[in-house]
Structures are given as C-alpha cells and as structure tokens.
Image 1: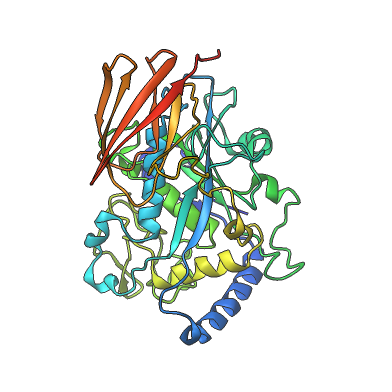
Image 2 (image 1 turned 90 degrees about the horizontal axis):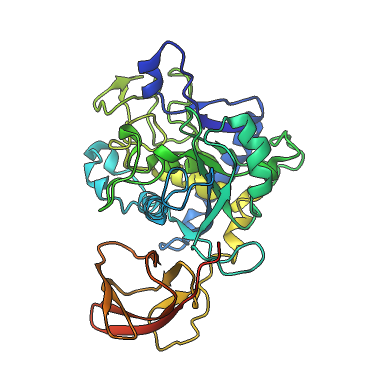
Length: 417
C-alpha cells in the first residue's frame, strides 16, 4: 500500500497546486495498527526501565537520481549540492535541529519531539565498493517524465538496492506528483497478517520524490524548486509514512484519528500556512510534518509520532533490518594522522570528503608549480569537491580548520568517456 502525494489535476488547477498528499488506507491497515498499538502500549509500560538518554536510530540512505542522459548538474541529473541539502534537512527535521523549530507555537512546544532518528549516507554500494559519490546513485531511465505505474514497473526493479540495508529514495520528474512512499509491512509484527498484499513488495520498497520538491533553497545555492515545497519537507513527510505515520487528520472528519494522542483531531487537512485554524474543537497543528501545510509552516513531529516511528523501526520487516546495516560505516582512514579522509584517491572527476568533529572553514587547491587554482570558503557541511575544469595530474589540497591546517595530496586521472 502506498501513501502518495497525488495532484489529481483536472479543471481544479488552483486546488491541485495546493494539494500535498492523497493517501489511501485499505482494510489491512486495521490489523497493522492494532499490532502497533499493542507494541506501543508495552513500550510505554516499560518506559520507566529505559535510560533517560534514548538510543539514536540510524538509517542508511541512498538517493537514486533518475535522469534522461543529461550531464551531471543539469536537468534531472541533479547536483550533489541539491542532494546533500535535502540530506541535511532530514537530519535537522527528525532531530529537531531545524532553525524554524523556534516558530512552533507555545501550545504545541511541549509535545514537539526530537525523534532520535538520524540518516546516514551510504558509503559502499551493494557490491561492497566505496561509492564515488557518497549516498548517490545515478541512473539513466531514458525518459524525461514518469507516471507512478511505469516507475514502479520499469525503474524500481533494476535500480533498487537491498531494502534491508538501504532506505531507497528515488528522485525524478513525476509528472504532477510530489512524491509517494511505501508503507511498512506488518509481516514482522503479525505473521501471516496480510499487511503486505504484493509479493513484490521488497522490490518497490522506499520513497519516490519529484525533483522540484527535493532539496532546500535555504542554502547559499538556489535550486529549481516549487515555491511551496522548497525547503525539503516533502521528503520529511514521506519518510514519516515510510515509518508508519499517517496524516494527522486521519484523512477524514473529526471521527478519524492518526492514532497519536498528542496531535489534535482535525476535520480534514490544512493548506497553505493558515495558523489559528480551528476544527473539532481544537486548533489545527498546521506545523506538523504530517499535515498538508507548505514547507515554510512545517516544523515538528510530536512525541507520540516519534514513539510510533521507533516502534515500527524496531518491529517491522525491512525497517528493523535497516538498523543493523553496515553500508554507511565510515571507510578506514589509511592515514590516521589526517583528520580528513579523501576518497577515491586517485580520483577522476570529484573526491568525497569524510570527517567528524571538526569544522572546515575553507580550502584551496594548488598544483605542483605552487599555483593556487581554487580557493573556497565553506559555510556548510562539505561532502564532495568537484574537479571540473582541472586536467589530470597531482594536486595539493589545503584545509583550514578551527585550530589547524591539513595538507593532502590528490592524484587526478584522465576522464574516461
């Protein structure tokens, strides 16, 4: 079963531009939810035995960039900067480190939660080879635009990486959809419960996002994104579905619920950024990532939503296995004296930057003649350096950090067309 952000556009163009998500809950949801509710109740009963500092759940991700043969950084073949801007949003939103958390109304501040869920970029591919671009897999799908049916049948099966080791996220032009997500199976919760109807569920597991609702323009770079969905919250919303959340309205009237006690009942979903809306005798939580609000309004998950997602992660097949995956483990640094790991080295077009617990303020690249070829200030996390425009040869990279300078050699090879 899929939760998806369908824009059912006909003559109602204005409505379609506002619509964020159209979910379909079938009868199998009842058995799944009953199992989840029992597990949550048990978890709450035992909470007094748990440590105050909860475990952080780490999910490895791979972004499949589905293009139509464009050069990197053009069209659907999105830049690394756009991918990594989205990755940063996920970790900020799920750990409540998003700067707009300060805009959460006081009445909801007490239930807003750090979910203790984090995301890590995959560093090795399914063959065990270090990835040239951390967390990114590029694939020529041979089309500019995709509908959901064709994408499920023609793109996912040949591109999906083992869904017990990677959270697969596909990015392309979805022809009117903002995105959709595979809901967690309940087979690990109740054997034979019938929650997953499709025998090919593992082949399609993951999240699909439209390229114009992917990434964040709250960076030093601006990407080609839809105005309402330009802060990366579409993927935050969809991963909420991937981890078992439904819309806070329950996709119905006041009699419908999202099964989270600390979200108010709502008579339908909220649109735009209309704070102060009242329905079902309470103010709508338009700031919740699982509502229909614009990206600029969204800024919180609740404690009950966090508990539900972690319960799914601990129990649902393919979700619980993700927590044991080793694909995002940092490669061994061949030179422990260095704070920064560069790989691959030798490189062809770009090099990955891997470092922890330091801040890179700037870097420069110079050649064997001592000529400075590039000098760059760093204002956000640095993941990759592109060597476009530089010929093959030996280069020196100088990294300026808080209290030290580090110099490393990098061999750049000829590109193979």
